[in-house]
Amino acid sequence: MDALGEPSEQHALADALGEGWAADFFDSGSEALEVASRGPMGAVLQSPGSSRHMVVTSPRGDGTFQVLDPWDGTGYIVDAAWIERYVAAGTFRE
Figure (cartoon, rainbow, N blue to C red):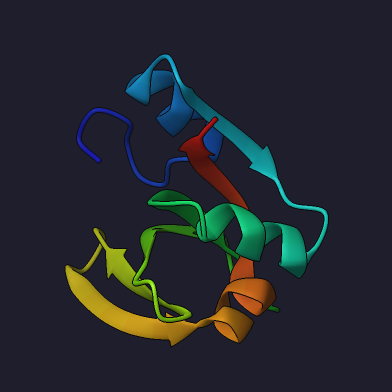
């Protein structure tokens, strides 16, 4: 966060991480879930009526995801429906 500034966005994070990382907006919740299921991702959250916010998601292998929020240091577990509903874009390994 110090290097990229706050708020950051998915393309700046991909550039900072370097080769092998990509960033994009998702066309659907199912696309967000497919990418999130591959491995750790910088996920851009967008809920109705609020600004975008980036967290880190990691699949747990049981259909759930660990979410870590670097802004406030919190962590929580979510299901696939949460990813499909709130993840609008991401930074992920190609």
